[in-house]
Image 1 (cartoon, helix red, strand yellow):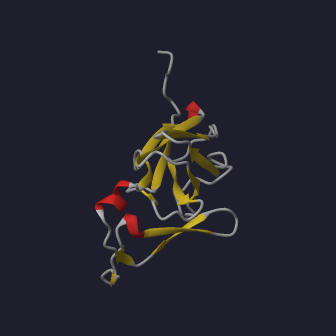
Image 2 (tube, rainbow, N blue to C red):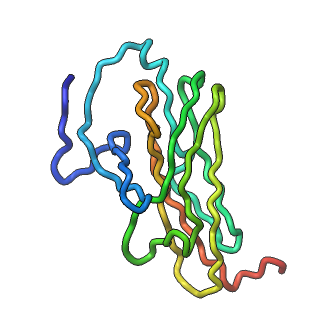
Length: 170
């Protein structure tokens, strides 16, 4: 097996990013080594990939909920389970769990043949003038399986737009 190390000061591609559980239920993203493994076409045809459909979504806070699509591609003839949780972020402009949005932790299980699931996350309309806020969700494999991997979009950013002053009935 040949290993390659990312160039110092660069971030490895998203498909080489591991998501590890952190105390408090949040995920913390940690880069890992990019490993090249020779595989046969037969092994590749048995791979299952789980990913978010989009990298970014926006929602107005008055809507009260955002629906996020998770897709499964590749080999679909097996049960596949993934977890999702917010990514811990700090600083100005980041939405806070249970302040700006409801707790977004859970597990998604795809049955044989299923290729799409939805996650519904509650959004709180705080009735305050404030800037737009955002948060990230990350997918993680529940159990190791040699033929199941995270797809190209394993983290998703949700932007909560403030909608004060908009006339919805005019």
